[in-house]
Amino acid sequence: MTEEQQVSEPAGANVQADATKESGQRVESMQKMKVDVGGGGEQIAADGKSDVLFEVEDLNCYYGDFRAVRDVNMTVPMNRITAFIGPSGCGKSTLLRWFNRMNDLVPVAHITGSIRYHGVDLNDPKVDAVEVRRRIGMVFQKPNPFPKSIKENIMFGARISGYSGNLDELVEKSLRRAAIWDEVKDKLDQPGTALSGGQQQRLCIARAIAVEPDVILMDEPCSALDPVATLKIEELMFELRDEFTILIVTHNMQQAARASDETVFMTMGEDRAGYIVEKGPTSEIFTNPKHQLTEDYVSGRFG
Ligand code: ADP
Image 1 (cartoon, rainbow, N blue to C red):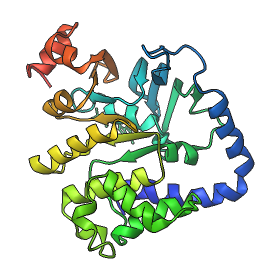
Image 2 (image 1 turned 135 degrees about the horizontal axis):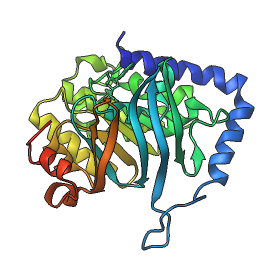
Image 3 (image 1 turned 120 degrees about the horizontal axis):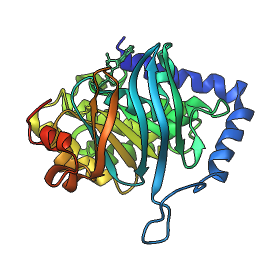
Image 4 (image 1 turned 180 degrees about the horizontal axis):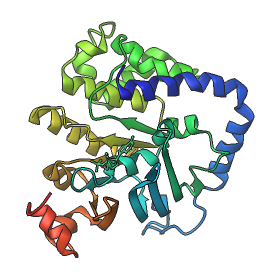
C-alpha cells in the first residue's frame, strides 16, 4: 500500500469511528468553525467580504528535533490558487500537509504556532482531524485511485461521511466537475486503476470533490504526468477555483506561473530549515520580485 493510500483509507475508516464515538465533539468543533467564520484579523476584499481563508501565525514545523520549516506568517485568500515553489527539500510539502493535518499521521511531526481556518485553530485538540480532512481535501503526487471501480472511488468517501442523496447523481456530478465524465461515463464499473495517469489524477480530484470540500491541497499533482495531461489538470484547476480554494506545491515554475494567482517562494537556510522569502501575486513574483533570492530562483540561476 502506498503512503497516500495509507493516509487516505484509514482517514476514511476513522470517519465511522468518529461518527459514533466522538460525534458530540465533532458537532462542537463544526459549530465552532461556523461561529468563528470571519473572526479575527482578516483582510476585507473590495466587495466587503472577507478574502482570507487561512491565517498562519509563527508556524514552525518539526520532525523530532529537526526544524523543517521556520517562522511562517502568511494568509491564504479564498477562491484563489496559491502555489508554493522553491528548491527541493525546503519544506513545501511539509507546510502544505499541515493545512489539513495530514502530518498527524507522522508520529515525529509537530508544530509550534498556528494555522487558523475560518478563524479556527486547526490544531486545537477539540477540532476533529477527520472533519478537517473532509473540508480540506488532498490530491497527491502519484495518482492513487482505490483498487475499486471508477464509480466506487467516488461513492466511497461520500457513503462514509453519511451522504444521503442519490449516489449515481453524485458520481456524475463529481466526474463532470473534474472534467473526466465524457471519458469514463461508459465504463463506470471498470477499475479506476485501469485509466491513464492523467485520467487517474482527475478521478482522484473527482473523489476529493465528491465530499464537498472547501479547499483542495495538491502536492505536485502533475509530476507523474505528460505535458498534455498536465495542461488538462491546469485547466481544471482554473475551473475549480470558482468553487474551491486551491493550494498547490509544484517544482515546475512554468506551472506556477501559468496556473496560480498567488505564489509563495520558499528556500532554506544553512540549518536546512525552510522559510518563506516572498509571497505575492504570481505575475509580480515572476516579473518583478522584491528579493534577489526570488529573482535568482525564478530566472533559473539556482535551485
Ligand atoms: P519539499 O516539499 O520542499 O521538497 P519536504 O517538505 O518534503 O520538502 O521536506 C523538508 C525537509 O523535511 C527535508 O529535509 C526532508 O528530509 C524532511 N522530511 C520530510 N518528511 C519527513 C519525515 N516524514 N520525517 C523526517 N523528516 C522529513
